[in-house]
Length: 191
Image (cartoon, rainbow, N blue to C red; front, side, top):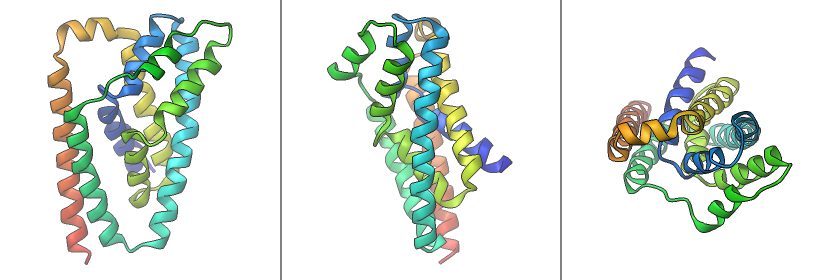
């Protein structure tokens, strides 16, 4: 579980850097207090990543390990390209982030849940779950995403002034390429 937890936390943390849900976290931080924002993010992430792990485990049970690793490696290379291309906070998600109300945790959680469906961090979690222990993957991916979003909520303005968004994207993309190539190599060795 330790390896799955640490790998998932690190990979999802990197994947979340510059992602649309991190941009949402930054937008919510301008509107709501820190703790309701983080609680909404945490609850949504916990649910989405539980589903992602379930999907990954079903795929792992149905398919042989070698081809799964090759497909996972190719997916990571695609995630690298997706990271370089970047994400933008669309008008619909921007509107969700700007809504007022006493139900901040519910509003934030719902917005994050919807934004994460089909997002690269969800797909990366599915991919991780095909080859790693499920509970560690679930908890690690949740911690990695919440940590990256906490960074946006707590220190977004400071980081944005000091670190180039292009440098963050490059770091995340290079990490995906490395993980992707390692998985492809491992998969080819298992065929």
